[in-house]
Image 1 (cartoon, helix red, strand yellow):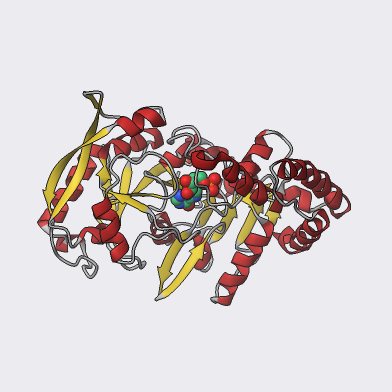
Image 2: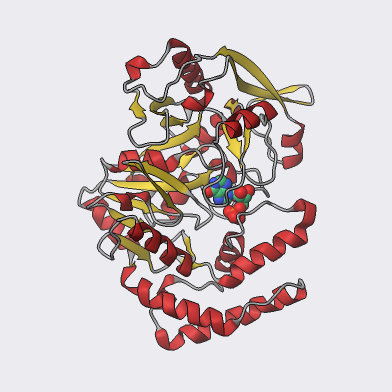
Length: 424
Ligand code: IMP
């Protein structure tokens, strides 16, 4: 067995794209199993910056197969635009290296419109979504009225299938006082996209299982992070898919029995975008990191909220994901700090809390309890081996591993592929 799942242990943006890209060298197949174009994975390689939303970052490597699994939601024109941009950067994409599940659901223009309209209606209770139509697409999937990639195959029925759904959703847009989508335009856009995407559609469940049976190494590239998981995250301030390790299995059709390793990725501090509780949020961290030009979203450009590393979050997400290894990214973001805080636990109404509480209200009332570490005050971005890691940085990493309950196997000290160190 040689399948590995990579998941984010925080609120997304942990730098999974870079870790996946690094591990891709040892893999044959890279698969996405959940999320959609809300994700933004940045990979810098050979001085070139690539931003991926739907396409697995394995596409940047020659001779790797990329799979978009059944659990992913696909915005057809968005996917085509992403392909065009990557091709413009010299990346080859064909049905030979990119296959898409016939069961993956489609994010349609009316889903995007609904996402924006519903957020507006929620007012101060808004979730802070990316506006990419993710929630409404998964809602249609669960409601059993979604369109899937396989529907793009049947040209004789496609217009009809798009039409009635668009008209149905227009009723809600109209009731909300929002502009309706132009049904004829939607049909035209999707029909045109279908032509180009059709050659990529395949039964990816059979492909993946046969690949594993043949001894190929599959890497599952998680999108978003554990605290955006629809079941285990800070509900309702979450995304609409299972971002934790189990989602990789349901979203790909590969049995948990075929998974060998789960690697959790966490930043050396914490960030989140959108609304919702964030116990270790810190003004000091936000202004320092934004001042360094860091922590702006690759999908929406929004400034991320920043805070200290939260051991409570890590402890729980390592458990839920069954992560046996952790990759710590962005350690260099802390290079200039004299003192670094780690949250070891919370208190809630005077009681010690070691795992995050279930409700947002309780989470908002939690008080972080910190211990302080001495900073290493040294530029880490140029070090090339684990032996060069300063002792104070080592101590910080060891404490993270202890609090999280998993060993740290990889360390990111800068954005490029080369700035990844193997720790053991
Ligand atoms: P949605 O996934 O667009 O519905 O957004 C729901 C929540 O998940 C919002 O707080 C988003 O900011 C957050 N979110 C979605 N995708 C990502 C991601 O890739 N990184 C970080 N946050 C994300």
